[in-house]
Structure formats: structure tokens, C-alpha cells
Length: 440
Image (cartoon, rainbow, N blue to C red; front, side):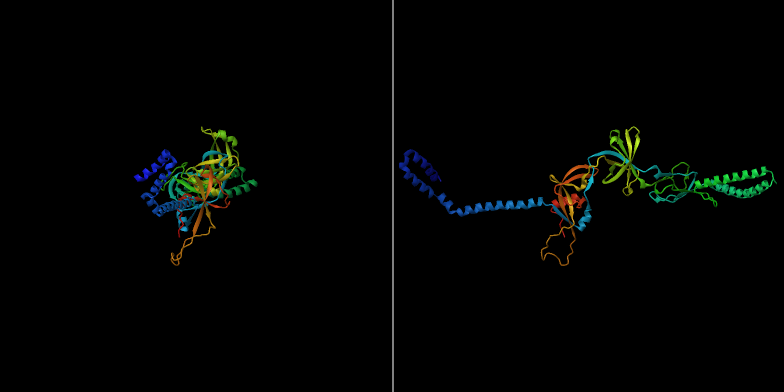
């Protein structure tokens, strides 16, 4: 190596100092360099150098190829579940709805029923509770006997009625006889007037006794000390505030019965919003503690006075009877009053899931053809494979979220009747990111 360096440095020195006259000596130095052991080694081992270059190139190509499947995996948009997985996860589907999420007035309130659809049952006469025939939550028809109480005064009322009716029968005959005698001037008219007066008094006494027994729902026939407590309306039995053997006092509530078929809302609207409220406007509301279901209603009444010191006015909205099922009075609600009919496409908020910086919904592909091919010889004969349900992730742009619904704009147009996953979308996203649940 020392000879090589020495010879290389000698070339410019020779040219600079002695000029072209010594060029032949420089060429000899070059020949010496080319024939040195290092250069000979490199020339003899060029195949080895080429092999190293080829190996490095091959490794870099393989690295690029291994990156491609990852890119493909990250862009995967489909996932499949078999029927067992579908049921286990609890997948639910629905359709895009048009909802007013922007031009609304927000209000809080509670469910209630009209006064005529709620009853507090008491007794007109005190007594000892003999029997109770219903349980809380039982549906009863109007006139159903809820319980019986015992009071001996009822027997006296029946006796009064029977006595009066018996006297009426006798006095009626006497009245007819005295009228005939009076007309023939056989007896003084004064006697006839006395009989007539007694007959009227007994009729009044009989009618009063009958009215008392009717009010107590006790028959005028026979004799009994039991008073039935009956349901004044059809509905569900609420609180039962008596016990067998207890003394039931007059004016004290024994049962509550509620008819939920006419359920409506009482919403508290602030003074500043009253000008935008009118009868007939549609509302969307959710139960405060159950925001997964939105229910519709329609305003039918607006109070003309403020409620207490809250400076709010009660707005009444009717709920359709089918939607009112399962509701009970006193449930708190959050409502949107639609003041302008400006609806947007919307889905339940759980239907929209986020993946990286994009948002998606999953569409069920009912007509998807299963292209999965099984290799021959790797399946058992007669193996039964469950039907697969396929889903495709569709990109959306979310907007306003309110009352459990989110406004969505689809990046690509979809079928208006597409079945969209409203429950279980997060599971499908996890399955898709993990390579899917495609199994047989």
C-alpha cells in the first residue's frame, strides 16, 4: 500500500516539476500501480462485489413488497359475520331518517296524563278491609272490584230501604182508597191529603236509601255488611295503600289507577321562545335516562300563565298511543320543538364510528355473494358452514348530534333503502381492523 500511495503522489510532482519530458517515467509509475496486489485482488473478486450489490437490491425489494399487504389491510372496508356471531353481538339495522336537528327549540319536561285518566280510589264509608283482589301493576277495567270493606251501617241502610219500600206499597193502596172516597165526598179531603203526604215521604226515604247504597256499590236486594271498592276508570293499578284487616278511613287514598293511553308531555318553554311556539308543531323527544330511542309528538295546547316562579310556560304535546306504550307518568324528557321544517339525513349516534381521521357507517349487503373458496382436501366431507352476513364500511361526514341522532352526509351515494347497522357498529369496526371475522 505504501508503494501505491508513493507512486500516486509522484505523478503530479513529476508533471509539474519536470514537464512533459518526464511523462514516460509517469506512465511507468501507472503500470506499477495497476499491477499492484490490491488492484489485482479487486479485479479477481468482481463476482463477489456483484453478488453483494444484487443481495442488497433484493432485500430492498422484499421490504417494499412486505409493506404492500399492510397498505391493503389498512384500506379494507368489508367484514363478515356468521349467523352465530350476528346473534351474539346483537347487531341491529335501520334506515336513514330525516330529522330536524338544527331549527329547533330545546325544552325539558315530563310525561303525564290528563286528570280524567288518573284516579285516586277512596271509600265513602269507613270500615275494616276484608279482602284485596288486585296487585300493583295489574290492568283493571272500569267497575272491577279492587277490595271489600266491612261496615255494619250498610245493613241499616238496606233495612231503611226495605222498610220504606214496604210502607210505600201499603200507602199506595191507602192513597188509592182515600182518593176514591174523597172524590165521592164520603171522607174529608184532609184524610186523603195526610195519606198522600206520608206516601211522598216514604218514597223520598226509599230513594235516599237507594242512592246511598248505589254510591257504595251495594245492592238494594238482600242484606250485607260488605262494601266493594271498585275501579272508577280502566287502567293500571298503582300504589296500594291498604292492607287486609286495616281500617280504611273516608277521604284517604286506598288505590291509584292510571290510564296511560292518553299520555302526553308537559314541556317548560321560556318566555323568549314563546313567540316561535304554535299548536300543531311536531316535537322529537327522548327520555332523559334512556336516550337510545326518540319518540315523536305534536303540540295541542299552550298555557296562558307562567308556572310558579320559573318564568316558563307549560306546553302540552300529545304522544301517539303506540309510542306511549311503556311510558309512565313522571318520566323526565328532553325535547326538540321543530319550529321550521328543515330536516337532514340522520342516524342513531352509535351507528357512526371513527377510524383514524375518518368516520364510517356499516351497510348490510343482503345480496353479497360469498367468493371465499375452500382448498380441496382441507375440508371434511359433509361439513356444514353457517351462512355469512356481509357488511361494508361506508365513509360519512358527521354533522350535528342531538337527542341520540347524528346528521350524516355520505361521501358516495348509497341506496335509500340500504340497511345500516344501528347497534354493533363498533364491534364490526374492531373486527374489520383485526382482519375481519370471516370464518366458517
